[in-house]
Image: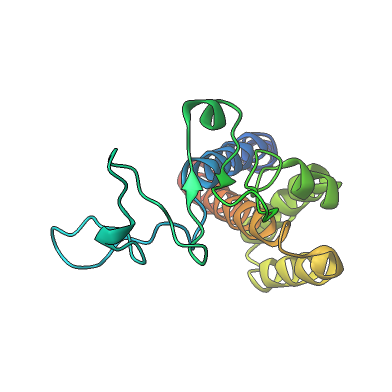
Length: 188
């Protein structure tokens, strides 16, 4: 019975953990695309004031539009740009774009962190196994080895994906390990 519970815990940790981590990264990507980039139309912290910081009433045109000063980057979000998952700056001379290929689940991060699926599966199996065996220091070793191994590949595009994926995977593996220990203690 104990071997069956170990096997179930390890398989659930490895297989369902993959889908959970993938879901968490997808949700983080949707959040990164739906929010305007930081440093754009900053709202004043005063209650009731919805006037963007840096825009004075004198910048308002007769038709109600705002003429943004050249030193303020304004995100121009239109239905077309939302559909294409692109947020472009109002000043097109600056090449700053937030696209679907960026972010924690973007193409750039996925390409840079190749092998992440297999590393995650092995990581979850090891962490769950160490918890089931009562060797909790092994969890720290696995996390340290993963961090040191990925360190050269981490940059602005990949660090967010690495952290979100590792934490989601680690939490799932620990939960499976502790539930497995509970099941072994209860039924075996």
